[in-house]
Image (cartoon, rainbow, N blue to C red; front, side, top):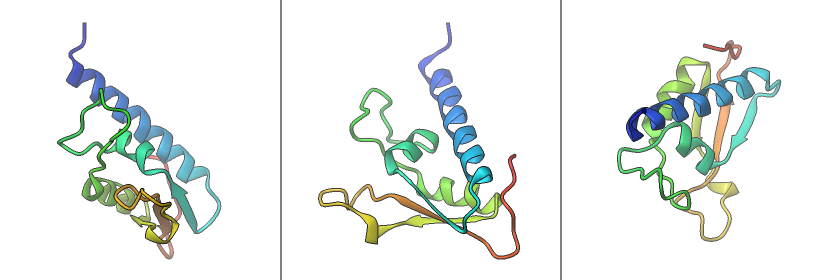
Length: 103
């Protein structure tokens, strides 16, 4: 039986793969993704997988991942709803001269 850590790693890879596919299929220069979805793909060290209501995003890991794929990722503070300033959606901006590729 896999350990909880192994299951979490498998789940994060599945979320990352889904994000990679969505960005690769996205034809625009900008895309938005929900904070809580990204927190499943890039959980912060203090992430508790049993607490689905308060995910924590490792924004630095997400930014590195996105940059490698030709995107810049940044919090979309202008799109935050009331009460979600700590978990705003994340805006992806395609870098000039790059096309999204699946890795």
